[in-house]
Image 1: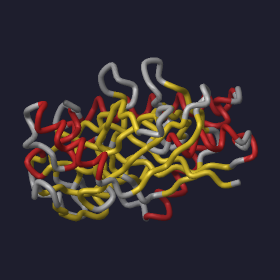
Image 2: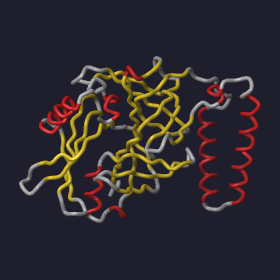
Image 3: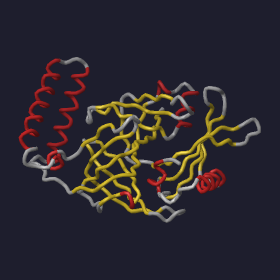
Image 4: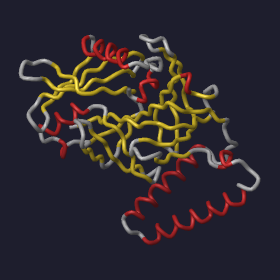
Amino acid sequence: MHEYLRAVGFGGIKEKEELNRLLDFVQDCYQSERTAGNKDGVDFSERKKAFAPRMGIMLRGEYDDKEQFQREYYYPYFEGTQEKYYEDVMVERHAEKESYAGVCDDLSLGVSLIFYVQNVADFLHEKRLNQLSKCTVTLRLSGLSIEGKILLPVLKGNLTEEENTEAVYQRTKLIQAAREGDEDAIENLTLEDMDMYSMISQRIAKEDVFSIVSTYFMPYGVECDHYNVMGEIQEVELVQNTFTKEEIYVMTIESHDLVFEVCINKEDLLGEPKVGRRFKGIIWLQGEIIFHV
């Protein structure tokens, strides 16, 4: 049983027989299919069925010699809408099956993002045509969560939105320069971190940590595409799984200048999400790679 099934509204499925009936239904009544040849010359296929807007179940498998689809595995998916350009995106195959992880550097976060690639067939198609080196790519990132809570907003400083954006831009430039070996940039970043540490040390004695830290985005656990995040809610929508009638919150959140969407079962979210409040939780990060030739 996939742990994140409940994130897309299948929290009531407990038995393997129920799951198999659901997967058989998806296999027979899929809404879209994408097929591409893999490195072994076999037709690799993705069959997708949505059970709520932009979310559902994806089946992956291969076609045999009799042109019959052989299901290998499945996963719950949720598609994001926020598209962002990244200069370098690497894609690597997982060892145990035909699934892939994507890696990109997000300078606003200061870390490398690792995500589960949703559109493997598109990637294999571009790779087979030897067009990957000619492509520019954008990403649509999304997160599935099975554990989250809503926090109240923090009092913001006197900086305007434009000033905050400029501050993020300047820090991003510093990080880029530091990665290229600029000693002045490294020194400036070190001084900024020391000032930040000093400020937090003074305030933490009298304030709660979540009144000081407004957002964060950091790796969680041993699985590389899982993250512990906190971000400000920009949009929120309640949707329903048409198959199970379970309700799912879809939230657009901003964390360290990274804007993406998160879906979570209503039963797994503590608190009421509203614009301006903050979401805090564990997410499984997925991403769709958009190829521009």
